[in-house]
Image (cartoon, rainbow, N blue to C red):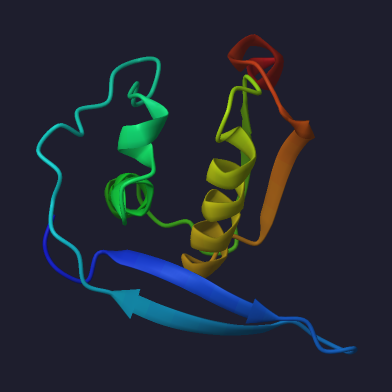
Length: 116
């Protein structure tokens, strides 16, 4: 990962359309971001470091292929920081051209439920 990898989305909602204002944020890599089959497991305090979650999410967008116009499904187990993490994901998904984001009710969505 290099500089300018984390894109954040600033949005406003006029009455007739959504306006997206992309902002590039220069960051540095975090050497401990080695995801496994269960995603990236870290304490909330680590995820709350500036740009930590954004770097991780952008690395997925960069490595997994083209997302423009796609639909992604997201959710979590409802632990602390789940809501904020999903909001960050929504912003970064839009910044990467994702057309639709399906989120479990209240942000809750288990892997077996998503697979089904």
